[in-house]
Length: 338
Image 1 (tube, helix red, strand yellow):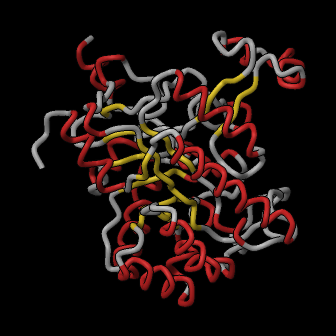
Image 2: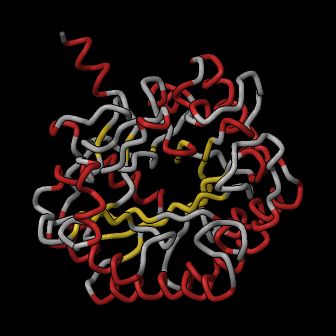
């Protein structure tokens, strides 16, 4: 029984026990971080294709990084294989990292990350569904390639499509990762062959020795927000959202109106939430590459979203924090010396 418990506690696809929860000290304050998915452009409505490896939108990243820095953020860019394997986008990432204006993490899109041994399908777009040895080799090659190109060994990880599974945590520890930001609490991807995070908490936790999880921030809002389990009933989910009785709001500018995001922030603060994790995909920095930023007007709305969120955080005393400081705080909460 003890061995089974240890195995469960060292997995990301299974909700943690309360004992694994990381309790940050009052001195940490209330903070927010941004982990951006720096990735290739592809057709969001089409099938996955190994040939979709263009990274032209990364050219917009230095200007975007400067805007985030001006707001006090230390962005962490979760880069995948096409970004670091392309000479142009790889150079941009290397120069950004060398400037000290951001940190670099890993994002694994298996369909464009070698070795290419699996069939490209929707189910296989979740790395957790691949054979163990293939998962390991894809992660090893990508981690080494990021270090080779950027000069920095990544210690933060996000699975593409949030595709973590029973082996993910052990592989991350093997390759020196300290922080995972893959869990999208309150979401369920089983219908596509992915993991189920509907029962995962929003608070950070320890995942075995030396590895920590910071879930993406999501809030339930509306009159029924104290009964989030109602949202799991697909038959009434649409009605609940349309009537404002219960809505699920992730903290991202992609598909989430600013007013909803601000309501979600207030809801989370009211629940005592201490560490916010926000995200978006870098192809949204250039119109025409994601469903969320189709034209110049959408791009202006995208940046107004960020300005509004930054203003709300500032008004509520929520300050920015980078990935390295997060890991240091988690280690301290875990009783691990630096």
